[in-house]
Image (tube, rainbow, N blue to C red; front, side):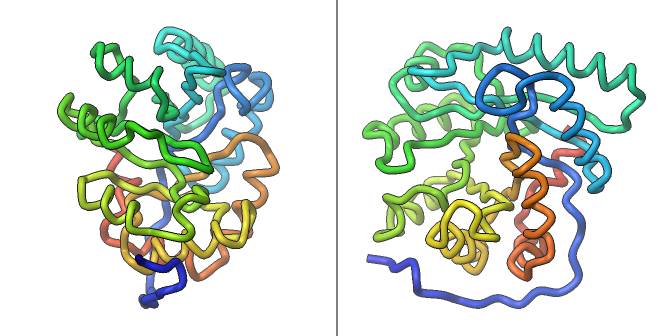
Length: 249
């Protein structure tokens, strides 16, 4: 059994700013993120001020709660883009989804329904329950990859079922599942165990994406604290980090 507290400390040096955020909830009135377009624009302006050039926002898709479809998500995106254009804001915005690993999502994959992916490698962002993994997750991962998608596990540091045994995380990684950590996890915003696991993932050089998971202004303001921390600098120093590759896709 691999322990959360077995650490390998890496060094860090000069860093390249993150220009693409690929996990957020900025489309209004579609999930537990922004409530209206005014809130969406306020946050987008802050992303611009922070140096971001592109946002790929990812509304929840959950079988029991947020049954968002590509049509619903892309309609909201079009309206938000129109406002951004009218205001002359200099940022690119796109949309995908954060799929919840459940029977509903599995059925979408099995039926080859349209899924919202991003990037040349057809990245699919998915999450699990914070307490237990989806019982059919191995099947889900296999089917996603067989369909030509590259699965990204959202914020693995927040899943309590990984805290006592990290073997499952390493196994998923070996199967080709990419990992995305939340910037705010590095401040202890969610919990101290989440912070420790995020740091371990960075130390093990397993971070593929680092993202805001921004739902509201409180999240964005806390991100300012995270960006002063050494573990944030270590994360963006990682040669494997793929955020900025998305500028051209």
